[in-house]
Image 1 (cartoon, one colour):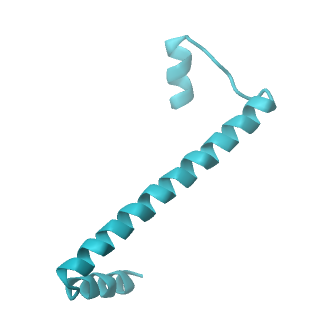
Image 2: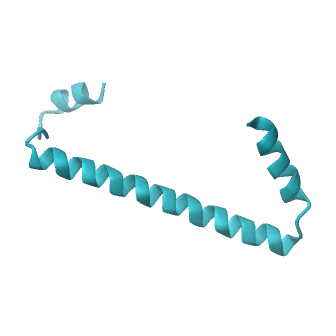
Amino acid sequence: MYSEFANIVEGAKKLSSNEKKELKFLLEKYLIEERREEMNKNHKKSSTELDENRLEFSSDINSLKDTLE
């Protein structure tokens, strides 16, 4: 896998400035899309847990800290 990545990097070096800018734009778009999908997946999971009464709410700081550990 590393050699494939290295090939991509080497190929990117050979692109023109405009092509590099377009590649950067596309990569940023892809990263945003991945993050949106991840957030949507987490939202759906949380909604399901809420519907199934599996979510616990607390204002106790020690309880909250325990859930993060």
